[in-house]
Length: 312
Ligand SMILES: [Fe+2]
Image 1: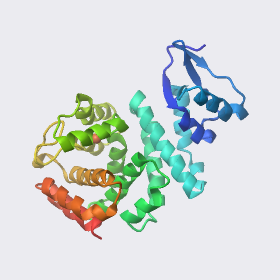
Image 2 (image 1 turned 90 degrees about the vertical axis):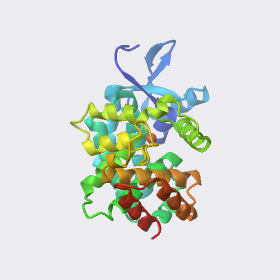
Image 3 (image 1 turned 60 degrees about the vertical axis):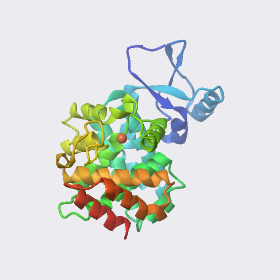
């Protein structure tokens, strides 16, 4: 039995089994009758024991916060960059997912932000060889979860749209991409379905969904030493609209800066592309819908750049 005051993190077993090289030396715990118990098994039985647990209906195990930090350091290792491309996408996907889980449970740490920036830089380096948005979808649709495809498609689109602005720089792009990884950490798959349902039936959002931009931005504000202010603003505003019908604050066009406006239209474009199962032939209709909502202030230039990218 172990010290109950230590902090533990729930990790889905599927994540451990998908990345045995990262997790095999980490202590794994189970909760039995409200007590945390360490699993003891020889190295070569790692996979076998976890699969047996799955067979018994156990889907998650616990790691200590300290060991979880070790996982983050491993995920940030430069050795991972030497893996084959397909494996790199997989490992970087794990890095982003594990780090988002970590932040959800423990909050922001500098290690977590470093892992996200490194994983994103690795992914973008792989994506840089994609000739365009449609080619990107075709190439990665099979290998990534829908959520991961959506996250990286948004980042890829951000890189193309920001490229239309003379003040663009790798650092600004990195900030926008980091905001994208962070903004929906407190939502799960079911919440995204609720958002779509509420939007199409004109219903009010449940409070926790309505508040998620505020909740996450407040968490980020408590670590201004590691999170740039542009990232916090984007996270805070990512569901706002220039017509004042967004949430949670109902801001109007003059309250947005150019970077936030670019982020919002790219994020919304990919949301709508996902709704039609990433059918890129719908791009003109989606762009038209967005143009009827996102105009005024910095949104005019943001939409011009977005349309130029998706029509090219
Ligand atoms: Fe969101």
